[in-house]
Length: 123
Image (cartoon, rainbow, N blue to C red; front, side, top):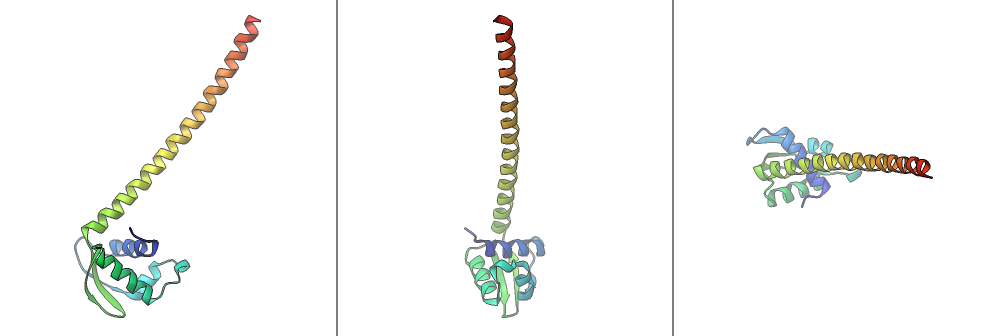
């Protein structure tokens, strides 16, 4: 499972690299891709890149202290795509749940109103 830092780095790499092509990426660019709440430095980027390479998310052809030649593997693209689909499904389920909640409230209100009218007509 990816942590937030590795996921941000992987998202950046997938956006920057074309399908199956290697690209040279500066460490400074990767540092900019990480939010400041992580307090990123070059060691953090190196750890993330090593973790992604060992997990078969990316392939590193060349690495240096200042740059990497890297490409994301199909597994990484699939993981990010599945995550995006899950987010969309959860948003859709939330919308449906909210709609049903409002619909039940309205039906309960109308049912009570009709029951009071019927009770008033009978008694």
